[in-house]
Length: 173
Image (cartoon, rainbow, N blue to C red; front, top):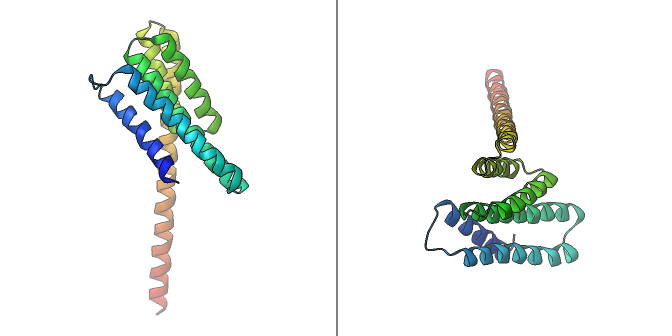
């Protein structure tokens, strides 16, 4: 993870947070400029690395990270358009962000984009679409929760097995 890639991620996160807190001092053009530049910057930074240094498995991980960043930035652009009332553009960006997130299998981003789309469609009185995206949001959120719980159960089982092995070893001594 290079310094420049980290910088691009931080810029994207800063924009996302600025949109979330609805900082009124931030104008729309600088927001879009930062989001678009951070997306392009991260894309350009990762591409030479992929072509010169990465092994095939490293390429897959790096490309996934790159597309995850692009999906994040497109979702941020969609959120900005939504907050500004430009719903047509918001829908375009949020649907593309959802498509990319689905393609790379990023459940956290898929959940987030379904939630944004549900809110967007609700604001535009398209309640059937809002409901469909809300259902998908809930399903994905539950999947993430179940995945986390399964990992936690696995860790607890492993911890229990280690404790049992230590107790058995102490009994033998």
